Length: 439
Image (cartoon, rainbow, N blue to C red; front, side):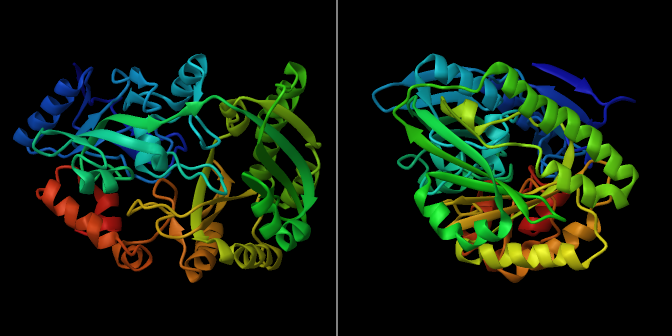
């Protein structure tokens, strides 16, 4: 087990650059036994413990001034059970490594988000999701997990073994312990046909229910200061495989969506008055395209332009009204928004702290280029989302506290009671958890 004390260069920063922490020490366990020992030693030293993934959360959910657990040695596939159609992976395994390994085995997750840089435990612990009519978040695909609790015990959790811990720890915010391994449901690899095309915002909103019902995975991006969107429809296909040509994929996904977008984002940050004109050009830059490929090559895409993000889940039936209110807000304000607004959906699930817990949900994500003032925009957007009973993504910027969250999560008390039992001394506490879960 490698261990390093924080010195002059011992500051941890997240991907978005808006969170930093100085832990007393960092530990990189290479096994679940070493992880359990690190937790026990932290308790002996009176230090709190947090595990980090790749820092893709925009909140301080993983920040600590105690012991920071680095997961990069806890990686790899423990085993594949083809009879049960499950795969068990170490918690620090990056999603991109899991996706590629599964594809080599002729397997796939059913659904996933659009970024695959995160570790499996970081992604699931904060509720990372894609979009789906019937298929939910990555955490909803968990069939078992292994958890190191505050006293160094190792719990195996499933619907049959420690079922109450399993129910909550699938999205546990790091509050119940440190996840050391996860077992996911998988299925034989399949093909998705992606149909991406521009569409006027008013048409998307007028036809939203039909677009949702007719497609397994529907999402759209609205460009503020315009009436334009780019829509994405992903549906299972019998084939044949028709991936994007390498040149077109590079031009649209790397050059336009990353390289050129980085440049215009920098221009917009320096000259805010230029943002509406830039938005009109950006919203017309991508043309319609259709391609067929294996799931992770369709669901995920490179995201090299750094940003800060807020995302809320509202009841699906409230989506159209909330987006209209957001557009009206931007149109009547002096805000200059250079990043598109992303809209996705998920079916209700049974995870206590899932943003889709007990209700069909729609997600509205607002972004600002890193280094651009975002608080005025996010504050105004948050007022709209909370007026609809919105639930903030646990890993994205928000200002909600336990008093609000206990009202919008019917099973909130179930989670906090379990936390009291598993971590009475708050070994896994930090400022963020104190705010969102209560002291």
